[in-house]
Image 1: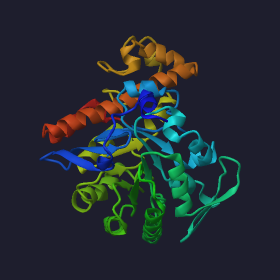
Image 2: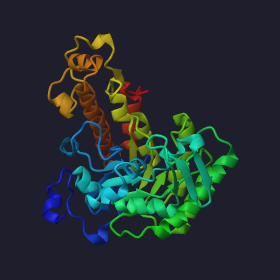
Image 3: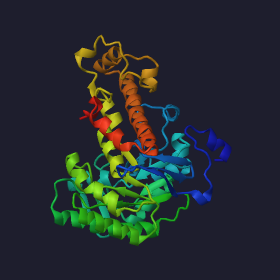
Image 4: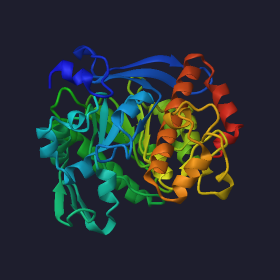
Length: 395
């Protein structure tokens, strides 16, 4: 695809000079927290941080057009390597021009390793030093094998701007021995992924594992730093059953004291608003989660009142938008809580779409405001105001 055609695609970012690809500039640091604002440069555009990444698991954010995502200010999307490897298959996506052209999105895209989805198959997963053998029970049921090299081959065919190393994630609670094995495997696989990854227009991020054990987390990040010059780091193995206070006991010192300053930190799979606010304070730069669209499909919206369930009868005659003052396409167009309540109760797909647009916009706007507060040196006050507000009741 020529450059002119690429710029016509929805979400197309400004061209970034090759010498800037996959570099990270810290532009501000908050004096009272560990929060920072930065810019990560990719071939498909710059990513301002902190940032929330909407999840388009199968190369689509459910029910939302790419142009709408662009309108809402989306700077980067996530696709899932496991699901795309199963259907339509990485070879087909490559023949279609890669994930950007396939889904008509011209901005940056991140693909995860697919490891979390594979390990969710539980008894249908076999681990070894060489890789993973698993049964694709949610597709055709065939047994498949992924080595780190095969995982990287799939990632490079998909062609996202950022991809993740193959890692092993364990749930919570888990024995220390099991978590240590996860760190050992993930570290070995990081070495092999780094060696196998050769695509220059794609960044490979390492993944820090270690459960709730700070010493294991530190062991993991030190190995990754020794393994090679990863342009950024994912932080996996959180939001796997533990409460958020338990997560932050190790997450905050990990970021503040042990992770490199000049590379982005991506907390994988975390997406409720209060955890994003606290995550930024801990020094996290990037977040993703299916939560805004998944909760939308159950009729639940984020708001400055906290979460609201539009199935509730109290919204039957409520003529207000989902959130007063909200600039999302759903609220700006005047759709009322009463109308959306009706759609949700009648299981009309438009109800899920309207709430999804709102929830994604809510998190994008929250990160925009967080970034502004960091730049102004006032993120501590931002956190205090958030925690004192009804919006923090988002569980």
